[in-house]
Image (tube, rainbow, N blue to C red; front, side, top):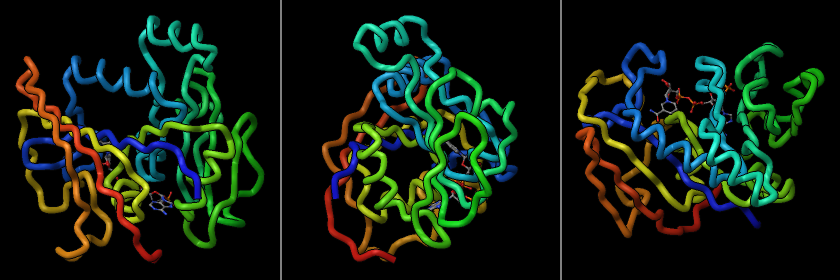
Length: 228
Ligand SMILES: NC(=O)c1ccc[n+]([C@@H]2O[C@H](COP(=O)([O-])OP(=O)(O)OC[C@H]3O[C@@H](n4cnc5c(N)ncnc54)[C@H](OP(=O)(O)O)[C@@H]3O)[C@@H](O)[C@H]2O)c1
């Protein structure tokens, strides 16, 4: 099944946490790293988040830089990438940042029968029974003209996409911080994998930033997995 190129970007602490145990969306990136993420968004056709990040943080997911937005316009692309939410219960109010910031396309993917009508201006697609079928969701995004997806978490969605072999690239910014906490989220949570089913990464690149952070870029090895 055709699918877009999928890049997961994560900001984590040196102990691998993507938030504190309080799960309130703690700041991890530096200003310089946020500029890098802005470039990733500007290069993407869509930016995707999972339901808990969507509802708890109501993220804007927009390209902030005027220059990058102008470059997109000059390329004949929409000023902002589409936003994609993966959830079984879309509950953001019409004035939410996710729905209003940037004025770009908003796509919400839900399981069959889980949403009563769509909020105005939102494209809601039913995809899967009980849970969003992520394989079909990616194929649907291809049908909608989306060729490059930036996934911005959280750990549950990241894990599912990795487990299903739907990820091409991983960019991991490691901040010079330690949060600790056994229940603090990490870049890939969910049920976890046995050692022989581990996701294999290759072609690592390392950049050390002036902010003391480290940017790790990996390609994800392709593998065929049975669903479920
Ligand atoms: N540092 C970073 O880079 C970064 C980035 C993003 C998020 N975060 C942190 O990550 C934490 C949230 O992560 P999380 O793991 O709790 O949640 P998450 O991955 O954001 O969202 C999981 C939710 O996605 C929805 N979903 C629907 N179908 C799914 C499917 N097939 N597979 C996976 N998810 C599906 C469900 O939403 P419903 O429950 O709505 O049905 C599920 O509960 C927060 O603390 C946030 O701050 C950190």
